[in-house]
Amino acid sequence: MLEIVTFTLGPAQTNAYLVADSETKEAAVIDPSWDGHIILQAAQKRGWRIGHLWYTHAHFDHIGGAAAIADALNPLPLVALHPNDHVLWRAGGGGAFFGFDIDPGPEPTIDFVHGMKLKLGSVEFEIRFTPGHTTGHCILYVSSARTCFCGDLIFAGSVGRTDLPGGDWNTLEKSIREQIFTLSDDTRLLSGHGPETTVGEEKRSNPFVDDLGK
Image (cartoon, rainbow, N blue to C red; front, top):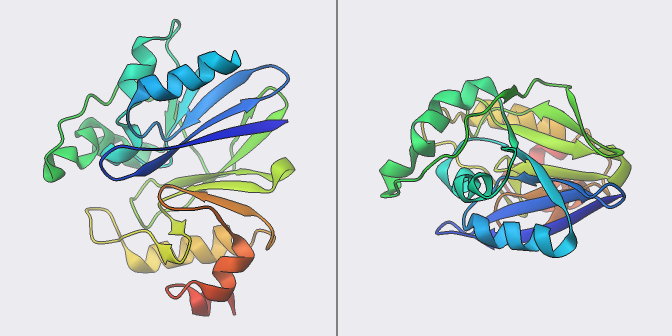
């Protein structure tokens, strides 16, 4: 069974998700945003073993805690990111633009591909390619739990910004229409910032994508 611990960390108040299979205690961190030691402590307290770091995209506020987590683990966790965001990752997630010099941690060795499946124990995560906020943005969908980790694609009542390098409004809109609004209305959306919401709620009331759900 999927277990989720949510953290809101760092200068941009970014959500990081520690996820695990309750049976095997295999764990991953989706977007280790900041203060990696806090995420590590939570895993240790539960007896979970972090073997993976999964990035929805490579902005600095989504990878800022990766180095601290990796430094404490042996072997190193496997890092997954879409190849389109490797350049952004190598540039420290664009942190310098906002005055942050971060250590991005271990290099990504797994390339996200649309439709690929990743497993923690018996829990399966489906990768969906959703560019628009960045050129390599992806979301992770767990059909067994009707839960989607959607990074900065869509938020409760809002959407990801498209004014940073690699952002594009039309592409973002297409990603939301094709990869979020095709999920069942009761699917939980766990975003990179802000509270959780559902697909149905955003179809009904999100002012930015209001027309998309019609």
